[in-house]
Image (cartoon, rainbow, N blue to C red; front, side, top):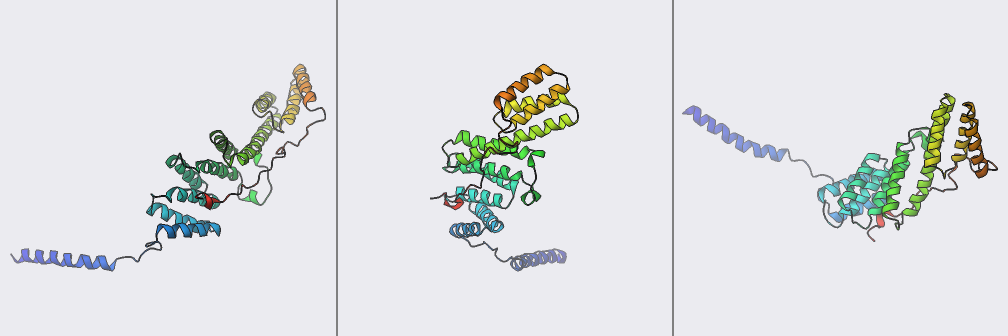
Length: 275
């Protein structure tokens, strides 16, 4: 019996001790513990306006997790996507924009989410050093360039009357020229390696898919050279006729020219979508 009462006494002691431990271990309230939606919205806008994007992301993530529903929710997701983009969080920006597209497919600013996806990939073609040291990005992997082109193409197709469409079209021209020049680099590589048939095929690809770019006359010149090297003089003569007809005075633009396309950062008020 004494052993039984000892066990009862021990259990009662634990019951009294545990609430005391709980009160002692209570953590202080977090930074945003008592914030209202209005406070979150105001603070996030201020952070974005001050270009403090890490701070904006922290605030917006808290707002999105604490208050995932309500009239503010779509704008919160858009602002968060923008803040990720400006903070060079490429994957997060893309995922956030895609989440908005899936969650709010009929939202009045859905076109901006598509546009932002294109911007993320468009600027992702530049590495850290490229922002400060001029280099030819067309000699590197073009996966982000291709993705950006497809993103802008989807925007133009889905929202031809969007306020972002004109800018997207300009960027598409720029990207298309870059893709064409990349193919030209590959054709030259084949010529340097004496892989003339591969070079000819690559030129044909340029003529088929990028026939409006400044790379075309340079591609024709390369094809003429390859045909002559292979003693295919009839084909070389035919290509020469095409070149002479279209470019009697030689190429009108340098191969790296954007065809007078001016691509500048699109100016928009990311905080004004609710107006």
